[in-house]
Length: 204
Image (cartoon, rainbow, N blue to C red; front, side, top):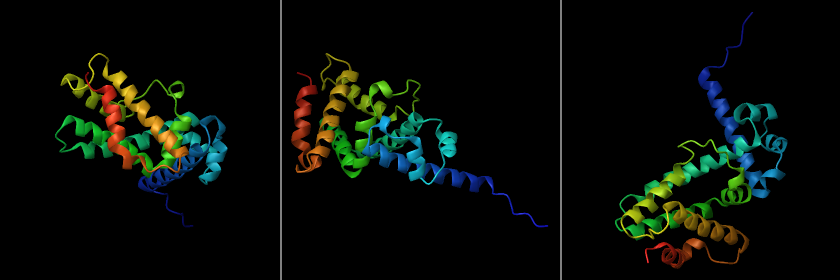
């Protein structure tokens, strides 16, 4: 009697990775359409052609699945930002490039913008985040801290406050751009938008 060969570890890992990709793609679609609390795990499972058991095995719960989606895209943005910062000489141009990269990234990935703005808020974030999960925030903070240390940015507040200004302006612009579809792309207005922000955070 012949026996079917058991799948190799590599095959199992490939199937697991493919399942996670389907689940996270389905989660992104649904979290982009509705707020986090309005999306059910069984909806995600159905859209991903998966089972609830598979989702629980990979993620544990819905919040962990959202965290995984956000981490994936935050790391993609951090990677892109790091690449674009290479070779820029002046500090202001460096910060302008950071500003442009964020606007361009979310113009290219509007579902990610809607997911983050609609489902991610401070009270819902886990507190046991890792350095890997802080990668994007740490990259922002390093750029802002450098500006303060060089006497370019306002040093009467900490870089975390500067980060709040930076994040706040970007979040509002991206959120409202999604609603005001008649306006030109934000990247087409990047210079004037950045100069407005620069005046708010530059050293008086």
